[in-house]
Amino acid sequence: MKKSLKLVSIVLALVLIFALATTFVACNKKKTDLRFAAPEGTPALAMLTFAVDNAKIDGHSVEYAAVAPNNIGSEMSTKSADIVIMPVNAGANLIRQGADYKLVSIAVSGSLYMVAGDNEGDALTINDVKGKKVACIGKTGVPGLVFRYVVKANGIEIVETGEPTANQVYVQYVADGNAAGTLLSTGQVDFIVVGEPAATAKKNLLKTRELDMQATYAAANENNGSSYPQAGLFVRTSLANDTAFMNDLFAKLADNKAWVSANAANVTQKAKQLYESATFPAASVPRCAVDGTRLDDAKKAQIIAFLKNVMPKDPNGNAIDWDAAASLIF
Image: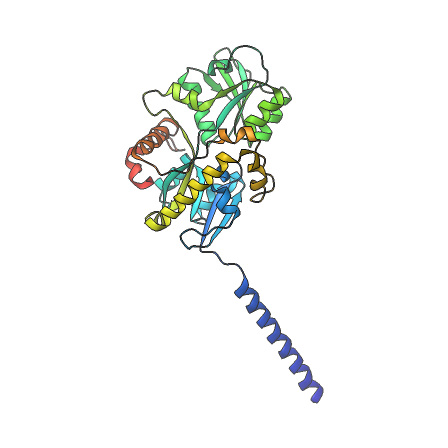
């Protein structure tokens, strides 16, 4: 009997110790009020310095996450993130369909380039793609949308199978800049359309020519918005309406932009603290076009013009009234 009581006492003691340990771990587990997510690559630079420092925003503790680009859409669609940087068209479309967020800033302006596989001939123009093959990142994102808009605006037909004729361009859509670069280096395509830092890395490797897609978009769109916005900063509506929170957020965005601009040679080292695969050649940093300023009426008009240009219909072919959706987006 005594042995049984002793055994019971030991078991109870162990249970109590386990319960206390679990409670201690739970109490000491880091808790955060908010989540701020951005895709790996250039968009993550818009939050770099304060994300690495785990800085609070207006007293709120924040979990900062650099996620795979393919997963960034779910951060908004599942309401996982309170603040999210993602392609402007994708975020605006989610809001149009009911997501409770606001587009408050452009985190990254246009940073897309078309890079050639050779350094022969004059400066590149969009007409050089005629009869050629192109690898382009982001079929349904801003890169693919901008490339298709510019090509069609110049009367060039896009094909995705077979060999292109004299007034066609064959386009192969790929997952990222590395995949595009491999196709270019191996001679499987003549040009690639990629963002920074991939454009600078490939340009430096091949000593080749390039075309600024921002300038090309502007040339094709002189009377309806001269700039395309690449990645937007979306904030949950309740936070977007909090003046103190937004003032502190924009102050941190401004400080971050200033640091990135002044420390191009140190960006890679800092970014590796956020995600290990980060690589930003110093020459690419100014071309990453990090922004993060408040939207004014002119910028809002440019965003709506961009959406009307590149995404006039939904996947079912129904026309999208972006003018009507503007009050939801901003």
